[in-house]
Image (cartoon, rainbow, N blue to C red; front, side):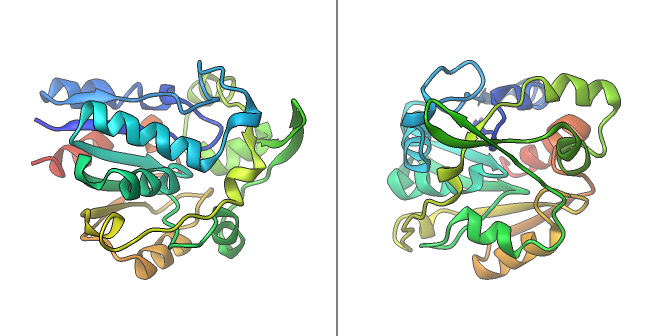
Amino acid sequence: MANFLLIHGACHGGWCWERVAPLLEAAGHSVAAPDLPGHGDDATPMSELSLERYGAFVAELAVYYGPVVLVGHSMAGAVISRAAEAVPDQIERLIYLTSYLPRSGESLASLARRDTEALTESEPIEIEGVECFTIPRDAARRAFYQDTSDAEFETAIVRIGPEPVSIFREKAVFTEDRFGRIPRVYIHCTQDKAIGYKLQREMVRDTPCASVLMLESGHSPFITNPKELAEVLLSLSE
């Protein structure tokens, strides 16, 4: 039995895994899909959020539930890498689901600037004096949820929230003897319009993974392809 710890991306919450978690549990595994600080139902102020805070939060959960199979979507690729650096003994495998995979000293913003295929746009907003961004409705539809039904999109869009801009500017140090010793898997979503397939492949080239798998999906396979995603995750827990 594996202990899956599923971490959502920017502007989202643990809700995005609600179609996948029951499938993993039905196969006999334990699953936790928390809200990161300041997301979903968590009321942590925007002023207290950082990638360091996210990573520490996930590291604490890995210790609590561990050892875990740690899955990160989108922005959370950087989060799970930070958790791995902090508590490598509590993590059996790192799974990057169409996510950012930064090298040591590399920010998410620098990766996003390299992406020539993404159709994302953000809308600046200030919350409690903190520079944040939100995802406009039309940008969410074409980049995050282009392959969902209208009903699925409407359910998701009302749950999307703000994200501090600083999250994408932060950098971290990853070492070979901590982060580097944990087996890594990358799951490409080849139709992704939020993190382009070309950039996905470049990141895996720069930070090689033990296994590389494919889903014919957009950026949100937990909504559009929950069964296929669950089957891939289950295959990695055997």
